[in-house]
Length: 255
Ligand code: ADP
Ligand code: MG
Image (cartoon, rainbow, N blue to C red; front, side):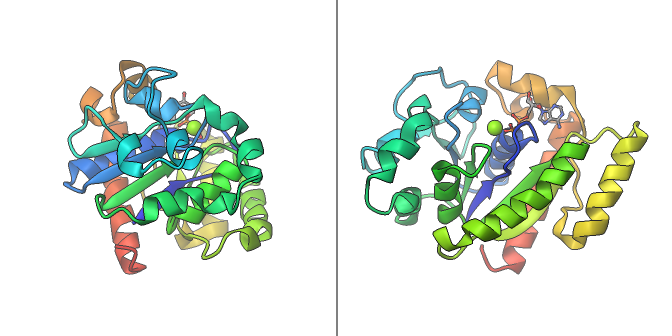
């Protein structure tokens, strides 16, 4: 199964979710690949990859190298990485002139039988990169944080996706909307969560990711939450999310 963490909005927890969900899958014994499609490469940095290090996803989607030559192991058992690259910041321009630019990642990943699960960390916005991620994915997870702007942006994301739908064949199914950075001490959080759950119902994951400083600190140590402090609230939540994602994926026959 290939699943993308995606949202037009930045700062909603896409990268934190992609990294820790991928690590949760690996921890559950699934051969897992994390694909960092964001030119900022924060998922790669989270796993201790230095900025500018090679190889990267650009080798695959720009230079047509085989997937196996660009994937690297990580410190996490069972988790491999196709690292991000600042080079992809200009990929829209370079790739737009090539044939079928949107299909490039899907083609690169499609032939591989090496992984049970692939998690794609998408950049914010609807760039060619995000479309490439969506084209490759069978399922998507849409993280949001309970803030006014993020909740409003959710509607824009889904209508934008509809408009762009014709650019991708076989769009991924929504595995779920994930509410992250939840701080139940504030009343406004409760109200926004109620709004999202009221509007989107069962499309919203039961699991919520708490606001947890450990999740924000782990990347600076080049660690997932599980290798940093697995029993922190954030680690417990991402492990639980892993189970919920797998159950939902099986129900939709993606696994
Ligand atoms: P995105 O990829 O959508 O831009 P990130 O995953 O990078 O979002 O998260 C934005 C910031 O919030 C990062 O600094 C990250 O460490 C922090 N963060 C993400 N999730 C949590 C959380 N549950 N608790 C605390 N901080 C978080
Ligand atoms: Mg990100």
